[in-house]
Image 1 (tube, one colour):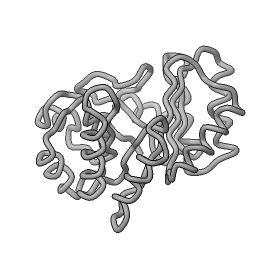
Image 2 (image 1 turned 120 degrees about the horizontal axis):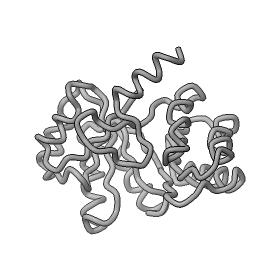
Image 3 (image 1 turned 120 degrees about the vertical axis):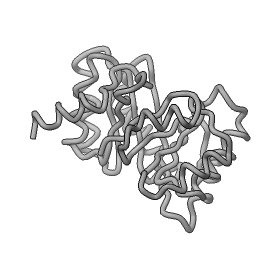
Length: 211
């Protein structure tokens, strides 16, 4: 499953990036919808949304209100960073109760790939923070980092783990063959939201070549 990362400011421009596809990651911090616009987007049951709001744009309480609203309004997944702590993760988990929404707890490292032991500890902590799915994305600085990242699939289930940067691109493809339910791609009509991200068309072509 390929989730297209919507990054354009404004709901209309962001939805053009989706180009009729049915799986999207909505970056609240980039698109900046109003609460009413968010509810309207999620009312479309033909589209599966991962909703996240990375820190730095809205104050923490506003970010949490967006995520709670998304969980209650039809999002398929809510993504909250491990750094936000177990109490905020529990708050989102509570908002998911009685819905079909699942909680992703994520860890991003834009400098390096930690050791396999450290990644295992991080994954365990994410699950302790009530994750249904754990997302790990780390900067790849060597080929060995790719091996470390992909080794997580031998130890854990319900994870989406991949590398960032040009050297890590192969893990975005390999993750789908190793057990990840989905991965993230850039729109064919917009900028990538992380280094080394394939566009939707590039990933579709690559997957067809390795089938």
